[in-house]
Amino acid sequence: MSRRGLTGIVLGLAVLLSAQAAVAICNPNVVKTLDAGPHLARSVGMLAGATAPGGADIGLGQYSVRWFGHSSFAIRSGTGTRVVADPNFDVTPGITADAVTVSNDHYTHNNVEAVRGEPLVLRGITLDQRWQPVRRKVKDIVVVNLPSARSYDFSRIANSIFVFEMGSLCLAHLGNIGHLLTEKQVKLLRRVDVMMVPIDARNNLGFGDLVKVIEQVKPPIVLPMHYDNPYQAEYFASHINGRYPVRPQADSRLVLTRKMLPKSTELFILPHPNPYAARRRWWGGADDDR
Image (cartoon, rainbow, N blue to C red):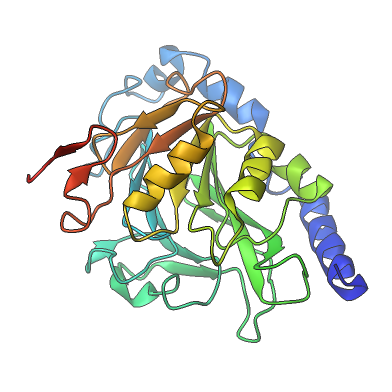
């Protein structure tokens, strides 16, 4: 790593650490408050788990992530707040969101025009490919980012690791990460519950180093992303199986609560949202023409 690059990432992390009083990353006090019990929700006139206002189909204390392929996710809180991360051309045209995050400026990550509703666009990189800090509260979702890069040289093309704090849960989207985490990055990510990791093993970390990153954070749930061939998930699961349990999911949307979090790291495989690309359930070996 170059001295210039190391200086940049240290300064960037220092800025984030100094701002923790204003915007905490995965504040444990928030977690404890929301875990206090149903009486907390009743105090504002709603039962915990009841449908929230605005037509949301998940309840208070629940959250969801929906995968659109590649690195695109719709992240939704129980109150209906929605943030789309790294929209690509598979993102459903017309999807409405309150905010959009962009981890890097490749066209497979920055299709912000596909998102409607006048969303707040939060870019983790500048036009000249440098990291820029994001610390914003989007209704009930706090969004912050950490400096990163697409190679071990942090002075090269920038990448942003985005962290989403939603009351009792904390999610991290690694973008196109090309290096192991620094000690300070690990410190800031240590409370992450769900981590989206790129598994293409070509433009990002190879499987061996990616497992090291997972070990650095130890999140309860790992969601593979940044691949377009569904069989890539099979390759990654084969590599990681035996180290972590592999949990194939039936839907590309995953509903999250604190109670459903595993006690240790597990790999959750979301089915590819493109039905033409994912006609076979690799984990069962049977054709699925639905």
